[in-house]
Length: 603
Image (cartoon, rainbow, N blue to C red):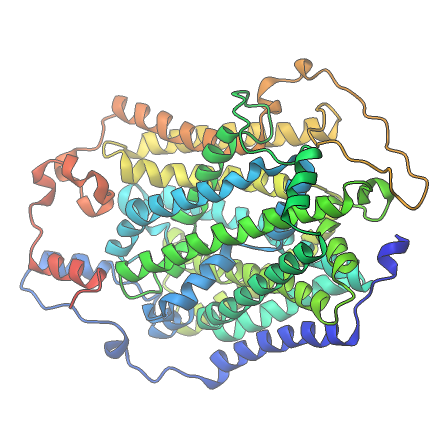
């Protein structure tokens, strides 16, 4: 670690980094203590034209959620009056964490550029989410996405999906804390646990004090800092890499430039098919129905604005991931003749980018600080989103939905804010477990694929399979979760036991300063391993989703399928409305039309 030891934070770096922390806490104080909403509920929520239809009015009232009080609606949804750009930035922050930044760059370094096709999958999922899923949530005006499952199926299915979401987010919490912690530890030498504690305390504070407004507005500038930091590293790295011709030439010579691997084998880590299909399924699973995303869609006044924020999110994330992939090539350019892991400069693949930053541009005052501020911003924003959304699910889906309790405004406030603190403590505790694991990107994807894939399958079954019923949905959900869990955990156990060969591309240590030799690679006969355990991690999510949909649809057909004529068309995606019987739409009147106009931002 001698080389890394010679590069440490300077005073300018600390100023840049501490400035980010001060701005984060300051935003929470501003929105939680200084800027108080002076608008009444009539001012902030547009009122639809009155109608004499008591049935429709009653239906609309049940779809107007305020979590029991105007104050909680303000705290958790911003009274549905937030602006497009800050929400779009918050959507980006919801997904792009330190896991994405460090994991993507090391993925390109170790496995080549085929993973870059994920940008195409991101664009495709943006179109699907905007036109298939968001319109349903916007029409129903849900507070929590899981309310839909009770409207479409049964309260038990809603409760199970809610518990799965909470478990999924708890599993994800330590990742978003640990990743920036190892990055700062790499360049500053500060104890990993001290860094983790600072991340959690700062994040819990401004989320606790300011609610979703603090989270969204802090996310907005943190996302900009994150973009700026990675772009600065990419630009300066390109300058010092002696031009694009040499960069891409060396990448091709080193076997990293891969864009057309059409190998049909599902066992190959990255192919055109696995990245496009698996990437599309995984990203759609998260962005279409996950509460962390739906909560932000629902914080906007109309469907038109929700789609606009999704468009900005899609373009922004595709561009950002592409820059991260490009930085991965820059890292290979620098270390093509001396692999840092083999040379002992780092202990985990996820330390590649921090090492590259301090060794390539660390001599420029403030750049290392800006980079770590970007990583920290990504972590804080992702963590705050999880804390805010999970506390909403605990209140709306568990307490109010599952246990049918109606807590007072004060009790709801105490519950939500206590949940935020408890989740922060859990995140800090689980970091200790995560320290023993390596390969952040694939582990994170595999763990979350179980809950995300199953839940997405349930929503897709409800919105795109009109005949789906309660029994079919329950059986499909169980089958999908068991299969995805079986594959995911079986794969992790097999890897831990050394049963699979590494698919990492060759590295060199020819130019290392010290006398370094590559460890002997041990070949394993993978034919002896159960086939499902050999699958690329990209396939775990689509297999889980497909299982839920196929099993659910078939079981529903044989167990009294839902009567289509009595089905509420608002519960079905508008892309299928022309396929529904006309009887579904009987009873729709001017009141419903007025709501549609409002959701689309029409006057």
